[in-house]
Length: 516
Image (tube, rainbow, N blue to C red; front, side, top):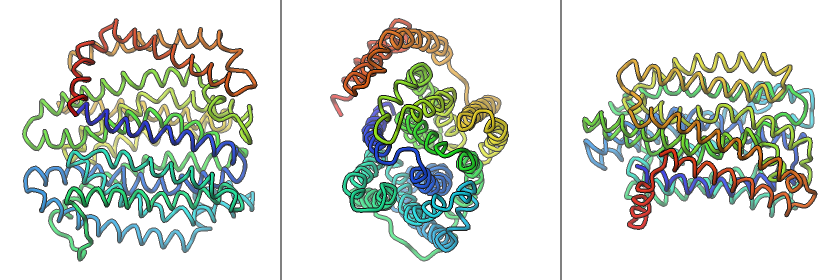
């Protein structure tokens, strides 16, 4: 399981590095003005629906059922089930796509009402979203193929697919911007092209695995009925989660120009550890737990969940500390150039610090929720999400006035902790999860290592301030590199001294990777 997590995490890290290059170019060419706000809304909306119809609800319902079919009935039966599900998915997505495209101005009035006061921004948002929204159909098929391949322990292609997206967007910025009215136009077409590229890549890998999916006559077979029964609560749960994200877009559109962009740039950094660690762990853990539970190995499933939570926290805490202590130099070095000025970097940095408060909870949720999904219980996370989203949205409305977009990020972090706490409590009460001795012993050690890193970063930031605040990019980048090395070195040494990471574990891991 750890080897698969490292594989997925490594590919995701490569994608995120390319994503940062993309964002650096985006910040320089697009900045944080009305065109940027319009594009980011156009980019976020199909991704909101993607999380609802594809990665969120769909995978939580599909992967455990497909994994079970593989274990019990074999590849042919599993393929037939996936064919039926794909047909259903395409029908629903096409209906949604046609409806949204037909009523795009009305759709935009609902999801970004604040843009209505600025006609040019509203017009651009309608145009950009009309271009990007078909991406939803393509990326939903990508998620289906990804679930199929992940269930077969072929994690590489699904994890590598986002690399293609970033390459397409970088190409759109570099090649397309000079040929189009704005960089926003080029990026919108780049989003659509990336959906085509990712779909073709995963379909090719599925063919190599002899798991090519084909549309069939739509019918409600017993397997599809079971899938829909599990999907219903999962879709409601994902819908509740997306309400919080939609609320960010809705409320931020009513804030002064730039708020949507500040949220975007801060969230992009926050998504780095969430993607590299949280999504990698969750992606591997769900089929792992599903297969163990299907085979009657409940103890093994709980042990896998403990190790996943432990690994998630050990790897996430350094990122959270770095964002909290050194958010301003990180944002300024990465993005402050061209149309993205010092005030934009400062506003984005404060927003990033607010997101960082909830980062450990965001990552742990990925492991906790799989304790329910692997047992085909998609209803309980819905009830938890309902409470968390209610608190989240209420806080957004309360904090948007005094704190602007920072209040939205604070509310998001509070909602994440509520969600994680309730999931852990319910699993524990049902006897489905208990923190074992190793996890309990290591939690305070993680806190000590994180505190040591925070102190080192604070001191290093003070000493490196002439470099970090220099006018030249070389000096600033050098200062940030030294800062990162100091923070990670202190955390790594503390982790080894405290016993969080054992030398014997590292040796075994190196030997296993050498065999792979």
